[in-house]
Amino acid sequence: MSDFINNNWSVFITGVTVLGILACLLLLIVTGRKKVAAQADNTTGHVWDGDLREMNNPLPLWWVGLFVLTIVFSAIYLYLYPGLGSNPGALGWSASGALTQDMAAAAAAEAPLYAKFAGMPVEAVAKDPQALAIGERLFMNNCSQCHGSDARGSKGFPNLADHDWLYGGSPEQITATITNGRNGAMPPMAAVLGSDEAVKNVANYVLSLSGSPHDAARAAAGQAQFVVCAACHGPEGKGNQVIGSANLTDNIWLHGSGEKAIIAMIQNGKNSMMPAWNQKFSPEQIHVLTAYVWSLSNH
Image (spheres, one colour):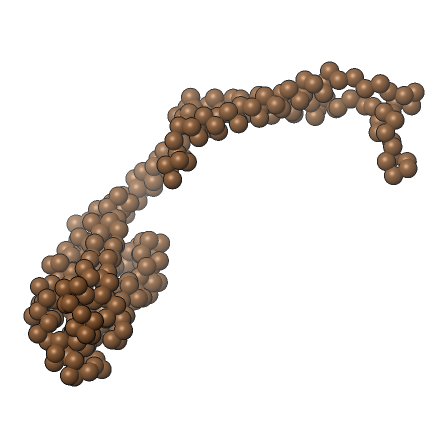
């Protein structure tokens, strides 16, 4: 990708743009000076389809004027605005700068609305119909792409409408998750367990923790081997919200259930990421969004 953003491309784009404008100007000059010998009937002698004759009339002045104005306009535009490679233009305008200004203006206009809820606890905000409506729109526009429009998630994306929370479902934890994002990682454990048989045994023991269908003999063999997993998931498999490790006893499977899915998780591990939203949302917006998300599992 770096080949497309180095300075050589800027020079190339500048050259192509300038040459294009100069070529248009040269075309106008050459065609204006070129004289075509006309016949007595003011035609060039070219005939198409038997009776279509090319007249030797000059270009209309309005057309020539528009062509000249186009060239002049392009020169002025490229002087004022970015268009010549990396040159920012005399006005210093940029799409990102305009977006930043628009977002700042929108934030200033919305500030009084969000200020109304800033001093209220999340539990109180979650009971306000107006706040919930605002939070829902924030969620739909920014969070539903992963968590679904009903916030019930899908494979790999947590359900926010139940009481199963990897990092905790308190208002404080939800605020921290939205603000800073989350990076969840489970390392591959097959090498630690030592064999495919051991992996299968542990997978069946994990299934047994939630009462899911499993091989009882393998589960019994995998119990002792589960000790390498207990460092994160706890000796009883109930997880640890401090580090975001999953509760394996509740029969809620974020990345798929069944022996095959669990074996794949043990063998390959999993890296999951939720982006931080503190660069897009103000603290007041995060406060309202937190109340909406909290309300989903605390009706």
